[in-house]
Amino acid sequence: MDKKSLNPFAARAMKLVLFVFALAVTTTLAQAEDMASMISEYRRAHGLPAVRTDAQLTGIAQRQVHAMAASGVMDHSVAGPFSARIAGANANAAAENIAMGTKTWAGILQLWKSSAGHNANLLLPGATSVGVAVAHNAQTRYKTFWAMVIARKGERRRLRR
Image (cartoon, rainbow, N blue to C red; front, side):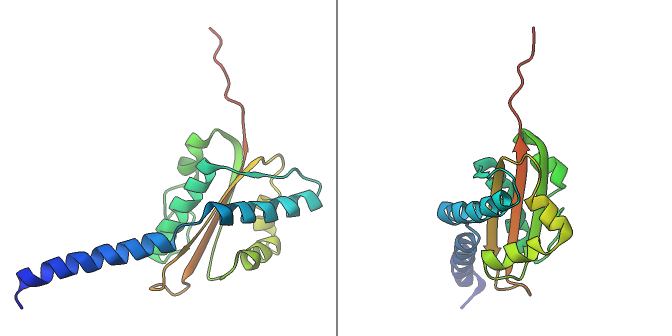
């Protein structure tokens, strides 16, 4: 076989790998709702209001886990600075938790509850919205990556004329 005959095969193989990777990093809406429900239950147990799943925050969390899974690196800035990623979300306050390696949502939530900084984010006062995502990449050391973005979203202010 010459190089020309390998190119179509290589291109198809790459497309298949990318397709499988895209399937592996997608958090279903049902999963996101289950995750938000567990966060809400925890918040209510601490006298705080429940949060609801927010598509914009979920998108921010998904971009973060995609970047972490693709690079194999757990870092808050791998998809860009958090302040830049959250800027368009109309949030008065926001926080992000990330993790890797834990295989289940219940497991990662327990880890975050036992970490002072992560727990403070889960219990962000006045938070109304949350976005959560998980991504898998078997080619990395830790395989599974998680992100949660929680925020107190504000009312859009009208400018006075």
